Length: 299
Length: 266
Image 1 (cartoon, rainbow over the protein chains, first blue to last red):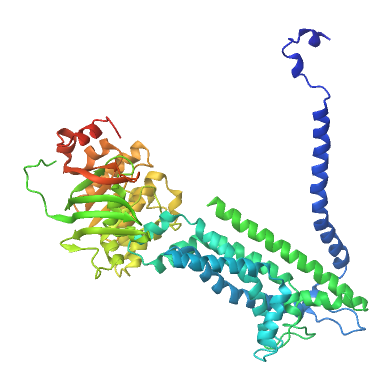
Image 2: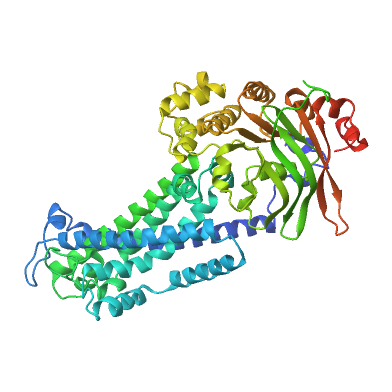
């Protein structure tokens, strides 16, 4: 009571009261929050679903045993886990040297003259197109190039090449960006000390860009781990332990693809457990790459 | 300090009728001067007058800029360093550089100093070289207990002295300094200036500075550059006057120099 009487007339309109714009603000805040929640839902739904369906089978056996033959229960996806690691590692070993050296060209050597710039523009364009290529195309490419020709046949090698094609754009783009962030001063300093271009790049520029490059490699690996289409007709599948890089090899994603739809319960459960494990693997990889970035920012 | 009457020491560099272009743009015209041995030569002048450009020509660092082109001669002990039979990488080993912003490598203090020596495949005692270079750069006492720490852990002034240590570790004959104190506080600046006086005994130093007091404090010789508008609407830098620091700041022969050093423009 006393407060209302003491308010100066100039202050009166400043007091809070219910207006249309206040209401509108409330409604809109609610709407955007709802949309944000809805977009998060699929993530948690997927996580929750594979967790519920997959967790029941989680045990050490899962990682150490072979999948059971149809009709039997138990077993695990040990061979597929090792197969995935092998295939992704092969893809990484192929794509990282090519990718990083391409990025070195794009960022360090393509500014020399107009012709080089033009080449770099086309290379970047090509990488962008490659980044949009569906993984099944990468699979068909490796199939046509390495499997049907009999160079490798259905094998871990062919699968590694298919995955490398998928990983290449991510590796190149992130390495290119990471190299560009390295301050120009550092290059001048090194060259000013009488270092050659290559010495400068390998001793100063690349080490400085390493955290960024690692992030890109981890992200590319995360993509490769989960990819199925590139593997279906390159790696094929196997119910045995991997013995050689030139034989068909089991992988987690193809195991999910094969087992999810078969009419046997143990196989279906195995597919769910493998799905859960894959999702966790990708989650961990994403978090790890974040941590690498954060460390780089701190320095 | 010398005056105009004393005989000049042997020049390390002679810059003769140098014009510098970036593409079709003429950046600097008609520079003729010399850099005396074991002395400090300062380049002063307003922004955009080509001081840094000239400085970077002395160790062919401008070669990194694709459109760069130089006419005229820059001789180092009588040999034109722009001759086709000169290896620019070797030139930079003899003529070191310290930059405006301290730019240590993202490596340990030790590795920063050892970098240049590793470039030239130095076979001697690396620990000894690192210590000697850091001592000469007046930084040893501050960093001797943390040689393995990152070069970035140092303060700005320390980082700049680290860069000086890094530059002198390869035993160059000349050290070029491009506004080495412009990013530093007055105390660090003073330390670097004292350091330059000490380095003079072993090295020839060329410094670009915006700070005229600094030029009077450290330089034996001073070159004053200015920029003039071109008909096409750009600006071209040129050398106005080159003489002992005493003459440039006391009784310059050119009116433009007088105006600049007395603070009337620039």
